[in-house]
Length: 436
Image (cartoon, rainbow, N blue to C red; front, side, top):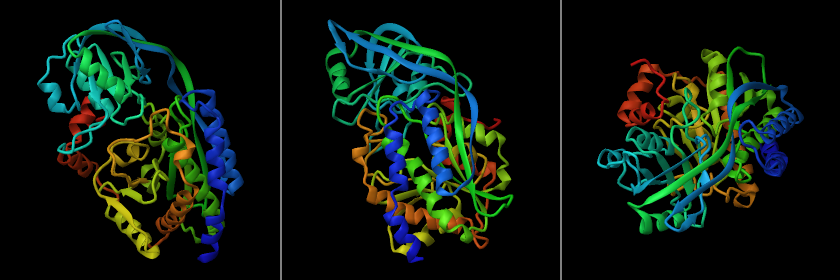
């Protein structure tokens, strides 16, 4: 055991790949940079020893950022467009809705207004309310524009997509503003007319998923996943270059332990995650769900030292994570609730066992993620290596004949979504896939 751990802790394979990814520049879904990142990841997986490294392409709704603006009074306020905002300009009174909880929308008159909401939730909220849920509550309430205000200080306007699977382009123009600009708008212009303008190029485009494999040729397989795309305003180191670097590091470590694998392991780096889980949804539509014994989705790893495993109510996944943590006497956080975001979800929503693996944080939201500050200097190579040790052993455990993780029924997932107050938000955003 100690030999592979020592080799992994000296490895630069994952970190070097992370540097390659962030140096590309724009990795927005459907861009040439996303394609380059996918090709680099395919080649890195092949160099690590994985077999059948390949790309699988698919069509997506393309969107490219143009100029955006907010005119308020005699002032011009800095902003950026939210991806898949329509290209449009509206003028209407601003309504500062604070946190933008569902009940806030019920109590406000937003017809023909521009609504502004924060990117966080208060401590008394029962659950996290996603950006897209706030956006579509605004649409349902009759708003004509949407302003998303970052809660993280530092003059950092947030990005993040709108739109649905059926209608990829949103219904009203949407922009992100920094905490400081949001504060200024709320103080000086709440109730006053402002103009929100978004210019964007909307076209057809192509994205791709990266696949590679290791281990015995079994029908069953463990998926080890990440997403390779990132928002165009930053390097995308945290979200999610680090996750894809982890997948490459795990492939390198598992290639040296291939004899320990008793189930096929498939590595997948998805495209177009940031615009609606498009790549993983494409994969989920074509894959045999019954053959997938577990998913280890790396989205948000390496940001901090301790790993967090969202286990979605699968007892076997919780047991496996605790087994590995106990083996190394290393702390981890286990979250047994559902997490209907990121690339595990197109499978988990149908009862396929899957983790969302990320780093713990006491902060609400993405921190530096989805801002200009998502850069390589926020990450530590030590954290990548330490977490790779735990995750390598976890994948070996999940790929063992002695580990069986029972799938959950779709009805159980639906019941949990209702009980955990997640169903309403999914219905509002068009993400509810079940027959009513």
